[in-house]
Length: 159
Image (cartoon, rainbow, N blue to C red; front, side, top):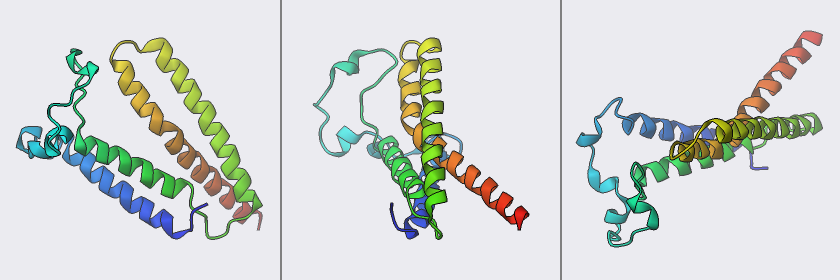
């Protein structure tokens, strides 16, 4: 487990990711107004001549988008910092809640994966798999903190 201070850093990292998502989702600034040199990872590092077999597929570009990559890294690092940092009062009960929340999030993620496999085809499936990569971590965080809140509230009511 990470030290408790990492949780605060994780929330800040998620805040930065949220700002980047808002900026690059055309909600605040249209994409044609953004600096395009930041968007193409290969052009930024002078790797324009490198290509992959996926470049020719219609509807899918294998160009590595630097901002998207940065957002994904921030989402993973922030989620790991939040989900796997110690609480101020870490005991066996909280460890048990973590374990149960992790198992529950894996079950839920597998259910979503099966639904995605059955109902989504084509290149849209790539988007489903992209979201599925993050869903286990964030389902774990949501499930753990909801269960922790409910249990702390029940303990206060018993007193």
